[in-house]
Length: 114
Image (cartoon, rainbow, N blue to C red; front, side, top):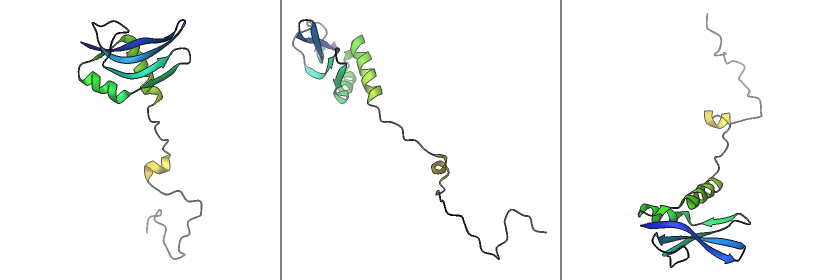
């Protein structure tokens, strides 16, 4: 079975991690199939190739608990922000600052005819 998990890199007492796709029976730092990102816990720097992670998950790979949390955090931070919509845009009427002029002979539509 394939797993998407962390591979420890870096110096002693200064770890950095590479997010890799690897056979679950291999050692933590063993030969991997593909590197799909990296994570530095000291600076909280996280870079992921989400399209490649989705590809491997669709092929049956499972994420480790830690990588699952990191992917969730990454997608929340990089999700497109929803644009603010004003009430005028919802109705579809243009916003004008000029007063609307009415012809003098026009009858108001609010008053009923007698």
